[in-house]
Length: 204
Image (cartoon, rainbow, N blue to C red; front, side, top):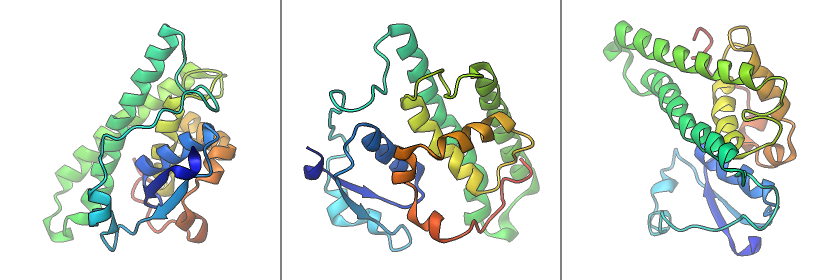
């Protein structure tokens, strides 16, 4: 099954990384990988755009159970999964405003507003981790799709110098999960080869 799959991905992209972690957890590591360069706009090639974006594969029968069968636990996991999108959005606004808006067009009020919104969101997640403690994962004792969704986004934040002093529980979680085999097997290759080049999030 795995060798018939093709994953188009970009190094360091949290959405791509989530897919790859899930595949590793499901023991489907034999899939074909096609690394795309965002700088070269390869993610907008005809080959990629021709793929049905709603195509789905069912992985439930293999590997770890990432979505609990218990309705109550399942609801909690699904809630955290979807909440990660808000974290991704607010983190992206801070990072990409700095990158994409010309410096002479940036407004201090917008920068501060964006940083404050991200800080509030991160404190919410820090609270979730405190609530989950001493369990190792965001929803308790088991690694779930909530972790698959959260870890790449948190790792993206760490890459941009997210403060360990301000978010100790989140950073403990990060360091605990970074050693997980599925995460190591799918770690962005350019992160291994180069040091971070920006500390945009250091004062959030």
